[in-house]
Image 1: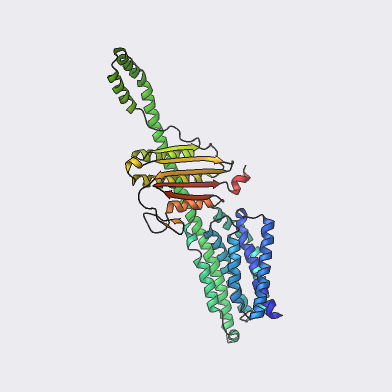
Image 2: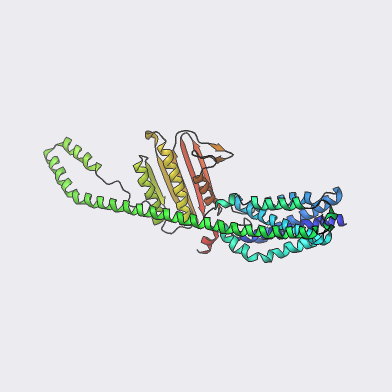
Length: 436
């Protein structure tokens, strides 16, 4: 009976682990809380019972069962969340790394490897106690980091940390159960286990501080960029308004001259003068969008499109108040317009064109579409568009994808016959929905 009970109880540590993993994910659940809780408990119990049966029938070690069980649970966890895979996988691995340190501590305390019934109960108890111990950091600090609009690059390397500590704990796990009774080895092993746990928690804290700092700096950079765009837009509008005032002031003189040509029936001179006057009409756009922030971004890029000889048309039907964060809309629009401008400059002049559209859908979504001509080859690997300037995925499109997916939106990129189209849906997050 012990051969069935021990592995089943040992696999039960998955339950407090998955509960801890869900604490910072309150706003990103794909399922209602009650259904998710029922499915999680049912899956965990099934894995525990199946692991106990396999261990009892085939005399399989618990470690051989713990990893596939954790992989199944991790797959379930990641696919029940509406958040980027980098963040969800990193959170799950972080808990696995901490629980592996707690397991080594239980081995050191009981002096039994593999764990005895007493050791399994101690490990399970420590894992359960860790949930209320980190409840506040998980529901406040970690949640703030996950909900941050910026996507810190530290998320791309964080997974190395828990995997490294899990590997170290497995490496130091004694193969001979009696070795811990020799001299001071048991005390040394306990000291190492606690040191690993404290060091891992320290690294987690440092990661949080580093990621928060990077996110804060990125927000400041984007705010400064937006302020620069607004200033450039203001300067452009001021110049355009001055030109329009001058044109209105000169209009009566133009009409007087045109009336003279018409009275003389000098149609050739009249047509030539009309062409000359038409060329002096200001080209600036006074208002591309009712939303002032989006208008600043669109006007800023419209100026650069004109300077580079790339025709662009805007159809931005967005109200002054948006259902999604203005920073998200401006970030996506800026990245798409920058890519379209670069593609347009590399396209034959007679084929250059860019069409930009934006509108509200269903009251809580913003639809963005940018279509532009391009020459050359679009590189793609495993469904991901690669950058034309550096190895790997394009940074701009990567940012667009992360921004769209964080609240359950999506981004789709189509290309062919010299036309590249980017379609993006931005959905209102739970904060925006509560504020309605």
